[in-house]
Amino acid sequence: MRPGTGPQGEDKMRERIFRYVKETYGTEPDYPFSGFPDYAVLRHGDSRKWFALIMNVPGEKLGWKGAERIEIVNVKLGDPMLADMLVRQPGYFYGYHMRRGSWVSILLDGTVSLEEVCRWVDESYVVTAPRRGKKGKNGGSRLKST
Image (cartoon, rainbow, N blue to C red; front, side):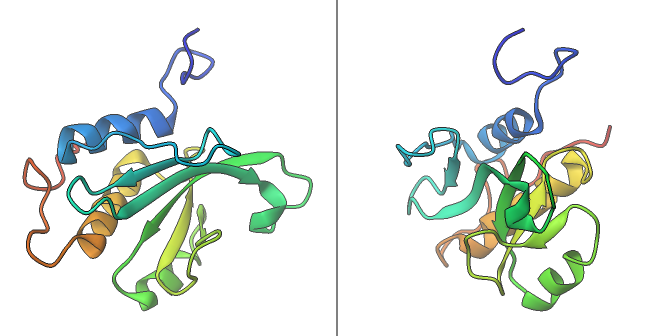
């Protein structure tokens, strides 16, 4: 089994997100943390500003007792009220290690669908973009329903 695949050879959610942002925004993951080599930052190509951070964190940091490490993506939302609504749903938490009002953490264990995760990655891309242009190289979301 190649790295980044699940037990049946299915790509991990993180790998699917990486493919999506590469196809949509021309973005490759960046690994800036030597102490955390699995933490991947997704940045705008022009400003290098973050729009997503994929990491695995101890479950207790998200309030889970006895849980092992959990893979999440942090995204920034434009409306703190939306973040407050989302964190009431399964698979969503206030942003781990980020400013609470604007950032949310999303579980990448399948609780939240890839389509929904990519919708929030798109939102984060727009919210964090420089004011001049806010669309991806291919015009925004390209994810197809499955």
